[in-house]
Length: 336
Image (cartoon, rainbow, N blue to C red; front, top):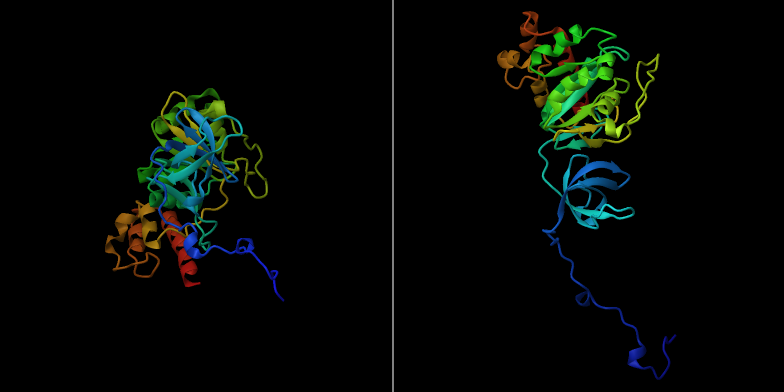
């Protein structure tokens, strides 16, 4: 069947443009040399709150960045409307190179790592001495993540009015890791805050800890102008608190050039992304004992020199148990 009449005009015929007539694609991306510098304060459902000079600007990630995501603490380059006015939106076109990264996975078998914070100087590991009970293995995992990501660790022990810190300090005090012990009364009268701030001034510090340890209460005391909802309930059966911080948030310390990054409460801290051979570096009290180990020792085998070294009293057996428990979990994952 003829599509056109007998006397058609060539101008009436519609033709599709050929490939040569279309605009050629290119991998060249604009450099955005005039982009403004910003700091990512928080991320919520694809919208990023950034600090640009003294203005808080809402932004979204540019399509040209692909799957690369910006996280709290990232230094970024922005273009577009940066007035900070309501209903305005800038565009993040570049994520600058990171100096440190705090990563975790849901568990040791999860291959998908999650970047929690970027460019932090130190990791404050907040642990309650009671209600809930301390979890040394979680502390060890946080230490491994800190060393692997390029952050200096800091131990913050809370609720010393409920239990003495001696036992935990005996386990970690000789690691040359700075620590601060606080009580609820000291948080109220401000004496503990002064001690904590000494460790934070001039640094970007990410706070981590499992739910109910008083992490957000501590952050609220440090940054009273930006109070976050806290938890006052710890489950009597599980000994765990309820999550109250649902997203990481960077907050400036008043009268200081330091920053505090509050992160959601942890239930687990997977280390799938950490090479098993580097785990020993998070145990500086055990590392000297590996000098007598056979070549390529996994530190979880019969000929490991750590057994005799710990038996001679050089380190706490609980630390060696924690190391090997972590390594055994990784080995099961590798063999799956």
